[in-house]
Image 1 (spheres, protein in one colour):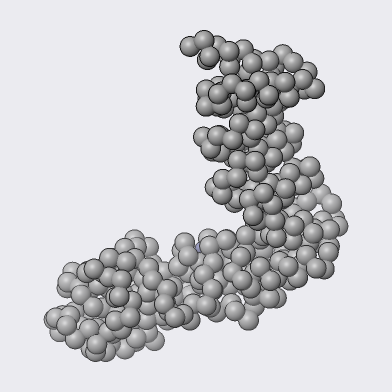
Image 2 (cartoon, rainbow, N blue to C red):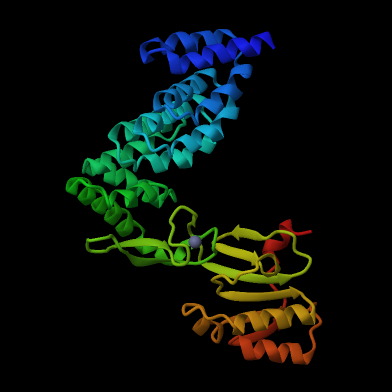
Length: 345
Ligand SMILES: [Zn+2]
C-alpha cells in the first residue's frame, strides 16, 4: 500500500514538474518496481494535459511492461502530434509485434516528427526495410520506389495503406511522390494480377480506379470486394470450393491451388471449381440456392461454365445431381482431388 502511494506521488509529478525534470520521474519509477507503476501510468494516458499524456507514454516505454502495448497503440490516434510521437517511441522500446501494423499506418501521419518516430520504432521492430522504403519514396527517391516494388513482389503490400493516405496530403510534391510509388507497385504487380487473392474475402484482386477528392483518380491493385491490399495471397492459380462434411480444415493452399471448405463460410467467394465429397441432399440444395441467388457480376456468368466434381463415394440422388447440373456448367461423377485431405480429420 505504501509502495502504491509512492508511485502515485511520482506519477502526479508528471503533471506538476516541468518537462526538463521528467527524467527524474522516469528514473524514480524505474528504481521502484515497475509493475506497480504500469496501471496508474496507463490511466495518465487519458489525461487532459497533453504533456502528461506524452510523459506517461515515455514512462511506459521505459518501464518495458507489455501490458502497456494496447493502451499505447490507442494513443497513436491522439489528436496531438507530440503524444503520437511519444507513443511511437514507446512502442519501439516495448518491441511487441502487435504494434507493427498501427505503426505502419503512422508512416502516413501528417506530422513529419511522428512519421520519423514511427520509422525508428519500426526499425526497432525489425521492419526498417519497409519503413525506410515508404519514407524514402515520399522524398521521390528512385531506390526507395524500387525497394517498395521488391517488397510487393515478395508479397508485402503493407506500404499501400500509408501511401494512399498521402494522396490527400497538403504538399503537392508529397502527393506526386506517393502517386509515383503506388504506380511503381501497380506496374510491378500487373503481370501477377490474376494470381492474387484476398485472404480475408477470398475474392480476386483487380486493377481499379482510386478516387481522390478534388484530383484525378489513380489506378491501384486491390481486392475487388474490400478494396484493401494488406491481406494478399500470391500465386493462386485456382480456387476450389470443397463440400465435405468430414473436412476440418477451412482453408489450404497447396501448389498454387487454394481449397476452401464451403460449409465453413457464410458468404460466397471467388472460386473456379467445385468438389463435392461428402454432403447431404440438404447441403447440396443449400449450395445450389446460394449460387443461384448470387448477384455478383464477376461470379454469376462463371457458374454456368464451371466444373463441379461429385466424388464417387458421395451417394447423391438423381434429383440432387440434376439440381447441380442446372447450377454448374458441367457435373462429373469421379474421384475428387485428395491432395488437400492430408490434413483433414
Ligand atoms: Zn478483401
